[in-house]
Image 1 (cartoon, rainbow, N blue to C red):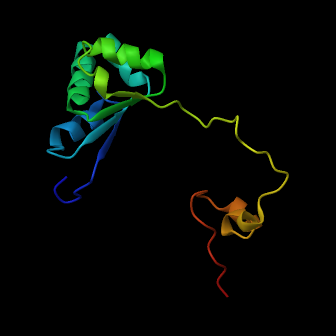
Image 2 (cartoon, rainbow, N blue to C red; image 1 turned 90 degrees about the vertical axis):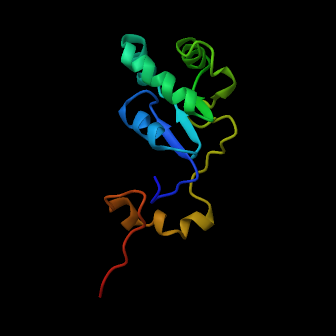
Length: 133
């Protein structure tokens, strides 16, 4: 952590191994715990899992959960000690405001992401490489 000096730590699956290790080495770096569900199920089934979830939750500046039910579950497992840290951010993208188009907007069509070569790249997040001549 000293070498990287991150501004914040996103601890996914609080209570499971890596988030617990990050929590224990964070020092003064703020932690944002991202709850996915399996971490909460593990805490339900295991006293060690519950202890870990509680440790990460207690050290977190915020705990993000996707549903009110999962927020309540985390709140109960932590003895309602982290209620103020819980924030609900639903999964996915709300589609109610999405505009469907037959073709991409002109500015996107000129992008290297929308070329025939882009569809054959192995990493969809990398722009297509330029051909070598």
